[in-house]
Length: 174
View 1 (cartoon, rainbow, N blue to C red):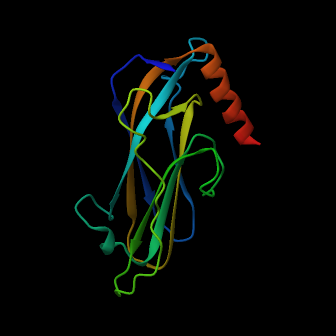
View 2 (cartoon, rainbow, N blue to C red; view 1 turned 120 degrees about the horizontal axis):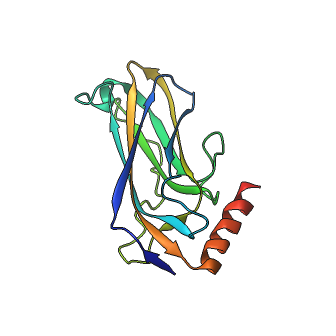
């Protein structure tokens, strides 16, 4: 399906949540990697999330208590968090902090590792990845930082494959 042009590399972006119940946004620019004329796309192999407190040396429990932080990476700008069946979702994560010890929230189980084979992965032909995070809880004492690490490679797709992915992405936009 795809001919790999590069080895795997990592794209990184950090979001800082400064308020509860307010979506925080960031983007990863893929314009230098995606080329429609050459049918060049990004193949996402895995996405990792790192949650840290207000500084790199503080824990998340120093910032938040008794709530959940949700974060998603999409290839279309939806303007907020979306349901898991949305075709634009590439990856998602959730962090639940319960300082009282009464755990009652589900865990985000969306697969963030797309396999180890050369054809495994999510192909992206859009020029941006969109990251949305939301802190849903009652107490918040300091900023919460989320680092998103996208492991990807550049691939060349056949004309038919590139067109199919572009059509699917356009259809998902509606």
